[in-house]
Image (cartoon, rainbow, N blue to C red; front, side):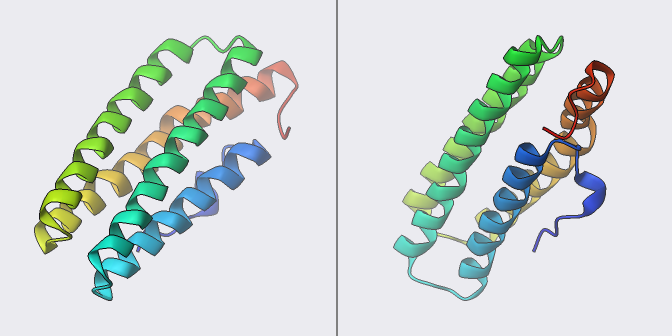
Length: 137
């Protein structure tokens, strides 16, 4: 399990809610793997995580565009690389099934990426909004 911690909050309500939901859905995938659910069910859960991440990234990038956020281009590139890696994992999952090694690799990558990205890069959005006087929206 990958636990959401309030220290990961960036101070932007919509973004924080989306981050929490991403953690929740990723944990649903991990629990399904631990419970050895049907491979198709596990695959669908992972597909949802992937699709939700893409949706979240689009919303986050739209917010950054609206704010004229100076780090937008680099942020988009990080999102793109994450999405590519997750798409690769999805293909492996579809082809190999949820092997312990693959699930461990997925968990390590996504958990560390989410925590690192949110706690460093996304926090910059909240800080920028505070400077602009638009935080909490």
